[in-house]
Length: 336
Image (cartoon, rainbow, N blue to C red; front, top):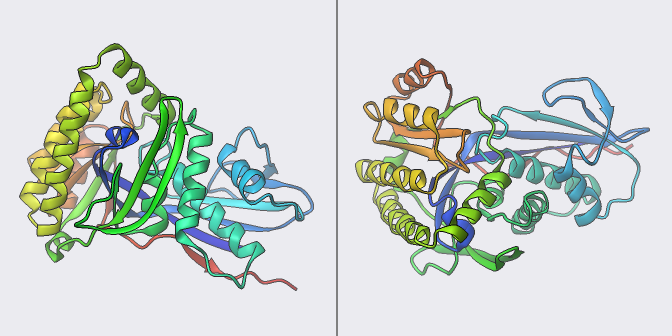
């Protein structure tokens, strides 16, 4: 038996633009996905996540897990029973699929190679591959990197000299080959005095669909590429404020980023309502992730009040501190 946990993530700046090589800043959050695997007579998975009832594993229903088992690990051992527990909102822009992929990859690694340390960089690339395989070939490594490495990560189309470089990766997308550099950013101690409050609209927002929608709008309106550049400038300003511990400046950058994402067409009425309602009790707020539903995020020193505003708008709040740890093994393999 092997159990692994992978956190979700929150993008503070740069979503959508990062797919085209511009920088994005993401932090891991407290909530995430836990997967336990053990040998079984048949391939099984719990019939709904967070339940104890199991059903026959259907690869078409679980493409991320299937891709990791067969295509990446090429696992040919005995059938497995897969138990998935998640306290992330699904389809909400919190990196639930990347956390699922990373937790599965970590659990399977520990199960098959119990004496070998997990390579978090390799695990991040495995998660990215699983994301791309299920999103029409379009996926940035942001979600998988934040989940596997933990803390605050910066993903960019080129190396940033002022940050700690961790690794490089690339992907062939329908629009051509994309390359990214992944960095780790040390945050100022002032950041620990604040909270992230995420608000889920209750409306699922499949990342692949939203990313494809932006790609189509860019083809029809090349002026939108300038908005991508504007998001890059905002991201750099926000990152500078994070490193300096200037919460007010971080909030201003979040607010500006939301306005640019609205221009890209990825916000909606409920997201805008929650963003507007929470700003009076926060340093800043914006949608996070793919948009079109999903979640918004507010940076605040009054998380309870912000959570109340989200509930009054009809959303579901989730409170988290900044930058939790990345993937980790909860139980060692115990073979008889």
